[in-house]
Image (cartoon, rainbow, N blue to C red; front, side):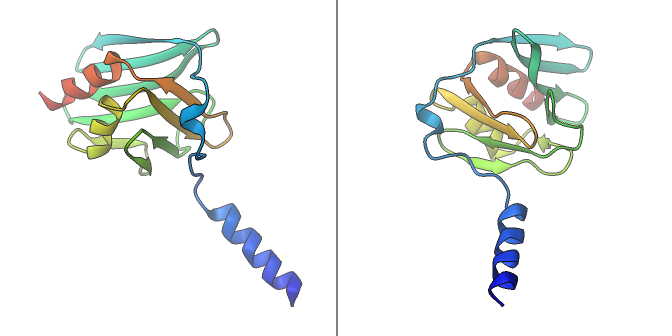
Length: 140
């Protein structure tokens, strides 16, 4: 009986979405730089480190959607984002409407952004103008 209870608890814990650790705001940010790129019908904020691009926040102007992709995570790997004011797992496809309040939280976070994808190390990124610019481009 105890074995069944423990097995059930392990299954529940394994199925629970990852949550940002309480102390992530006190950890150092990842070394790297943000860049912004204008592409035909798109605007992108790219965080890169010595290994290359690690996170891309892409606005597709025609659909007014913002997509997120993390190097090392599969194309369908769910992404969880935490800011100083909000935390949420992105929906399947890792895409949000330009009006989503999480995008405001990303653009106006106070100092840092936490990005987690199963199978990769979490990113703790400093806030920057580039993500806000890509997000704003989707709203115009």
